[in-house]
Length: 430
Image (tube, rainbow, N blue to C red; front, side):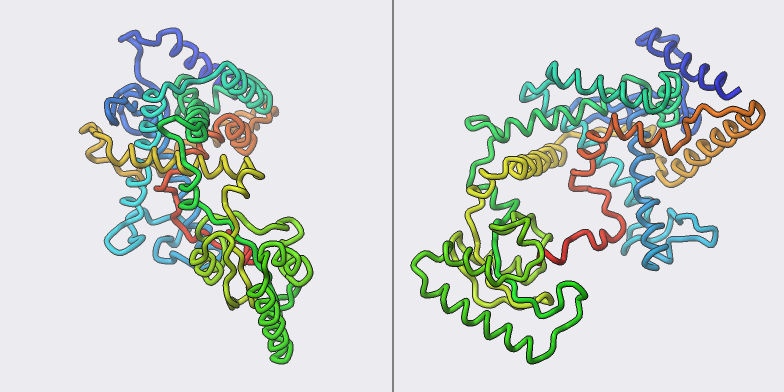
C-alpha cells in the first residue's frame, strides 16, 4: 500500500511537469491542501521578481521549524522561554517573544526576509550576468543523484519533495541559489569588477591578531590559580611587555616570546594568531585589538582567561596565506550587498497573504506530515514491509541537495537567531 501511495505521488509530480504551463492543471500539493492557494500563484514580487506561493510556504515551514526547534531546545536545556511553552510541550506561537512582538510576528518577519533575500539574490545575479556554469550543473545533478541513491529510488525522492511541499522546478530554483551566490562572490574577489571588495575594506568584517596569554586558570580544569601564581603571571607579562616596547623588530620578537611563553591551547594550530569576526573572541581581547594599528602591541589586557599581550597583524597578509578565509569574508560581504538590495527593493505583497498566520500554518503542516507518517506506518505494518525511507533518512538526503541554498538563507542578516546561540564561541580563543 505504501508503495502505491508513493507511486501515485510520483505520478502526480510527473503529470505536473508534463502539463507545465497548461491552464487546466489543477492545483495540488500539501501547501494547497492547507491554504487553498495554488502553488503557482504569485504572492510576492521583489523588484518584479515573482515569488510563487509554493516557495513562500516552503520558507514559512522552514523558518517556523527553526524557530520551533530553537525555542523548545533552549527551554529544555536551559529553562529559557518558559512563557512560550505550553503544558503539552508545544510552542505558544501567540506568546510574547520580546517586548511588543509575538513569536508569530517574529516568524512572519523571518519568513518574508528570507523570501526577499532569495529574490534579491536572483535579481543581483541577473544584473551582473551570473549564471550556472556547466560545472555547477554537473555538481547539482550529482547532488540530486546522491539524494536519490540515499533515499533508495526516484519514487522515494519525489515522495520526499511532496512532503517538503516542492515540485521539481522550485526545488531546483532553491538549489541554484547557492551557485548564484558562489558566482557573485567570485566577482567580489575579481579586481576591477563593480562588486570588488578592496583590501582595505576587509577590516570591516574581520581582524587578525596574535597574543601572548599567561593563563590565570588551569587550562585543563578551568580552576583558578592561587593569588601567588597569578601575581607571578602578571610579573612575567610585565617583563615581556617591557622587552617588546624596547624591541627594534616587534613582530619578530613577539613571535619568539609567544612561542615560548603563551599558554593559549590553540596556539599550536594558530601559530601566527587568529583571523576572527566580531563576537568570536572575548570582549576585552576584541576591544584592545580593535584599538591597535597593524604592527602595534597592546598593554597588558586582563580577561577571565588571564593576561594577554596582543599584537595586531596585517589582515591582508594573513588572508593571502588563507584563501578559504578570504573567500568566507568575501561571501559575508556579498550577503550584506544582497541584504542592502533586499531592503531597497520595491516589494509588493498579494492580498492572499493578508491573513497569513505562520504559526497556525506550521501546526497544520506538521499535523499533515504526522498523518502521512501514520498512514505509512499502518500500510507497512499491514504489508509487513518497509522501503527504508524514514523521515530521518529523507532529511539527510534532502540536505545533500539543498544545503547550499539553506546555508545562504541562514547567512542573511535576518538570520533565524531565535533562541540563545549558546556556547558557540570558543572561549579558548580568548
